[in-house]
Image 1 (cartoon, rainbow, N blue to C red):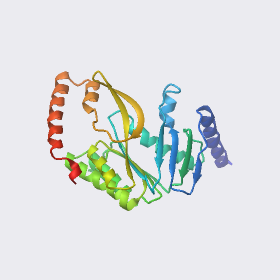
Image 2: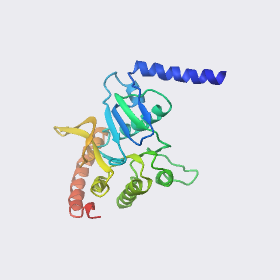
Image 3: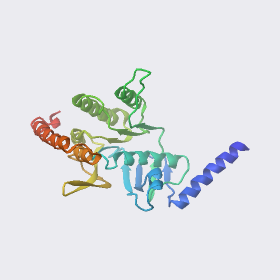
Image 4: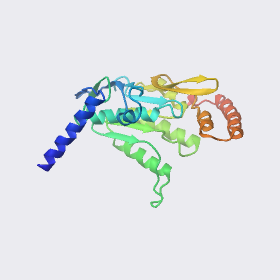
Length: 266
């Protein structure tokens, strides 16, 4: 009896939230399509002013677009977007209405995530080692029925090491796992893979620049970012002006050197 009451209470809670926050009933079927129109993050939406969360679409269709490489500036919303997609899929599969305008969601066998920073000092594992262990679990276990979201693979080591690992991971997800997935990254060099991998497409978080400042629109659109705006974010965080200016000088030199030896030659 207690178990039945707990289940009923959970469903009543989901129904109440669905009504209060204008959730929709998703179509859940056996396909591998993932089509979310106007998706929203259920937790973030509840913590900000009503009606201010910017909704975004997510469309993954393995025959043509099974994997999306998401680039864009720091603080633009990449992590929010990929996590809301996973949460919406999870909510749909437990029988809940979802925070979206409409959605058609093919069943997944598992949802794999690799996001954020963590270490295991007592166990002798650095943050990068933990990241690699989690990535290994995904690449070794994900199937063509899985949903995978990956956030910043390879950022915890040297630039070329990290880029190489991220590059190979994208290729493995595309060719071996063949799963539906969202891969958020600051390695803009990876965007050239969309020219070589048929089911991979590029998406980016849109921004506007105004008098030297960056305005985050929190909108996802097709294409690839060419900048991360990390120095602007550092300035907003309060780094000394001299450090910010020197960082800009170094960045210019590094970008000039990179243009002479682009990763697209790989």
